[in-house]
Length: 90
Image (cartoon, rainbow, N blue to C red; front, side, top):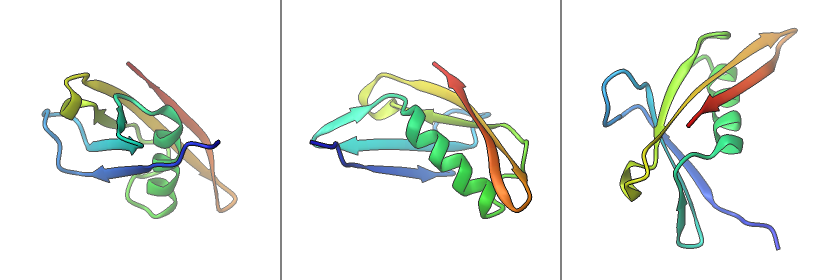
């Protein structure tokens, strides 16, 4: 059975210096940092011009469940496509 859920992103952050706040909610459980969702989120943000290609974006996640995480993500564009999606953090 595949897990399904939703990943929410907002610019409203709780900690200064972070650009985005994310939440991954599925079946009554919340993830403190969700690498796969962060990769998809930065790809979408770069594709739609919210984050410039190659620029690092800092996400916070997990504050609602007292398991605060931070991730630094980036993606590039080449030949009209998003490439080189990178996700790192703790």
